[in-house]
Amino acid sequence: MDITHLLTAPGSVWSVGTPAAVMGFTPPSPTTHLRVAPDARLLAFEAISSAPRGWTQGIALCLPAVRRVRHAPIRRMDADPGAIHPQDRTSPVFDMGRGDGVVRVLFRPDPVSQHATLALRGQDWTAIPPILSGTWIADTPLARIEHWQPTGPAPIFILGGRAPRTTPLPAGHVACAHVFPPHPLRAGIDHHAPFQRWLAEFGQPRLWALKQQVLAALQAGRFQDIATDRHGMATIRVALRQHLFLTGAPPPLEWLRRYDRPLWRSCHPN
Image (cartoon, rainbow, N blue to C red; front, side, top):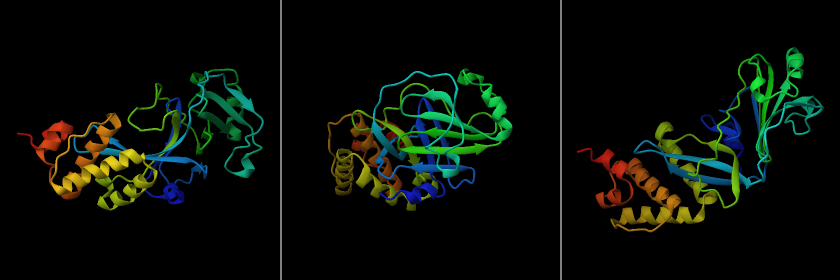
């Protein structure tokens, strides 16, 4: 898949990292740069949202899980060979000690912040003051974001815990980056078909086949009682909600009662 257009498509939201540390941005941005490995394994997915008629969708960049590592003190590195721009690869950076073996947080200080950053060596992440100016970096094996900001809190989110189980990742894999293209519920129906093509090519094959089975049954006016797992159930519910979105007609009651009671209550409040 050529994902170049996803990097610059207005309305797409990117995030790089894991729950241990993640940074995101919405392109285009003059202060943020993104690099994605051309051989990244992509997983397109859909899941249920908390809204009774909604769903979520995105594309995850996946790699085999690695052993988790402990947080470390902040340390200075003489060079950054992985920098996006060649002129930055010989500049000192600071490893800010946040990561889990997949993501690493780096900081390349501006000249005015060099002294304050040097003073952080050997300290913990919690010691970082909100006055540093420079480039914050979330680096993973498949994607890297570099974001420059003058001052302010670090643009890194520490989510903690484990990644949500709603994404049907391949066994033994983790996601190290995501892109969320414009959602048809917010951006318009024209954005639905393009994502379905990505889902057909880069989604879990069994879930795509299940979704086509449900859509064909709905179109033919047939009900099916389908035994499946949690990701399969989510796929069925997404198909029902998209049927309502695309046709304007609620799915048949027997489908709603069996698979999606929140959608049933939304369509039939009385």
